[in-house]
Length: 207
Figure 1 (cartoon, rainbow, N blue to C red):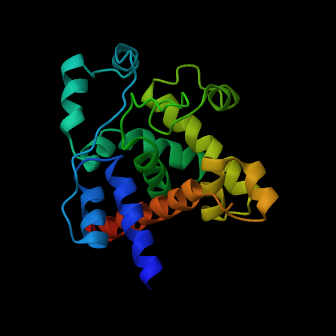
Figure 2 (cartoon, helix red, strand yellow; figure 1 turned 90 degrees about the horizontal axis):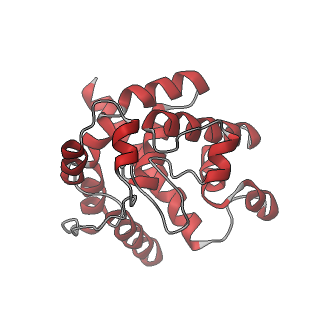
């Protein structure tokens, strides 16, 4: 129980680094009983690419979105998430959970490993999925969901293995016969599953 509690706290801290208020704060409070720390974000050095790719998003809107809650950021992309879910037959809540975990719903997110956009696609994956403009939120979500669908099919619909593969690559899942013993990957899978649970609870509450 002690180890599990420590693991939950570490997971909550990890989430706090990738999101602002809203659902992430609920999860952090649930796990630790503390308020969510103020996070810092790494955005793409050329946000104008995101602005031009996303119709109707002015530079002022893009700047203001930094202060929006995670829920609000996800809500603005809900049509693209719904489109991707229908096209690929993937749960909307799973797509949202991956987006929340990967980029905290930020279209201009850029990682230290050059993973880009909402679902943090690297260039090779984006190319394989037919994404021409990785900074276009719609293209990015469609491409990321297409890749997620391929992983689900590869691992017989096992969401945890597909999510682990999204983070660590399918080769590592095959090599280790399941979720690899990587601290980052194990925390990532737990984070995505927790977000999924929260989105499902929210969905049931709104019905």
